[in-house]
Image (cartoon, rainbow, N blue to C red; front, side, top):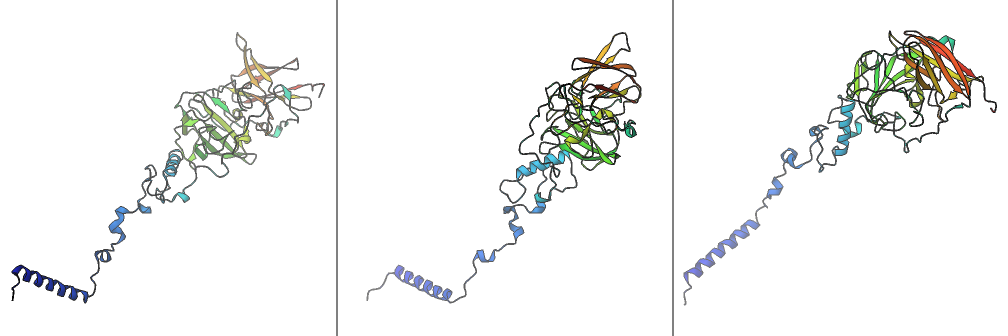
Length: 395
């Protein structure tokens, strides 16, 4: 019998052992795989998951684009701007976006189309009679302080007074402007509560959104004829107050700035009566205390039927010194929405503010007829003058 080589015997022996081992393993219960035993708790893999709500970064840190379930980057940027301008510090950064307060107050949403400039008629009579003065309300209500430091003359832009369009160059002016250096402190004109402080790019406070750039609105502690009174400070920067904050007369609320419709640094100042709306303004110079060195003159230019002359030049002749000086103003313009309002007591349609005391003459020329009316200005007081013209023959 031929003998098998040793190597072949060794190979057969190892094959038999492997066969027996395989049969034995087939009869044993299956061993769990590694995947079956490695079901780790979520905390063990948190570095591979989106951050939990408690780990949302502050709103000034852009959110990762890979976590759309969290606050999007654009929303975080908007909220940051709101926090800078209105500083709602009570809102924690982890508050869900849906519950964050909106930067736009209710009812202030921007219109789809901005309002168009109306056509203003100069040198014409109003279609309806103007309100008449109320003797019971004839006392001056200089209840607000000048909103700039120093307490002296409020340097109003004489070429663009309340109720004018700057000789056809601008939209109807619902306030007064005072040009000052950028950064000059802007002061609260009276005690009250800030009802808005921030940008108006997405909030409708003026002719259109982004009309003021940034603004502060204060509702004052007093009322006029049981109506709330507001003061508005437009084109400001460096706002130092926030919505809901109580402020005191003379407290700094912002700085002179530029923005919105402004092309150079100045303060746009308004007084609103009854509601915080663009069409509820009054002439601010009838509310600002002229101080201990100056007075204010309010006047009416109407025809014999009580209709107001609109956009007519009125000249104040100052003959107190050696040289005669002249100051011009214009009677209030009107528009389809009647955005310009006279005072309930004076029913004026022109004003000369911040006048040194003494004797003046009010001059105007209507339909080739000249009118002159002397008037005396007293320190700290409001003087009043009325000029009544004949009605045009054709009307």
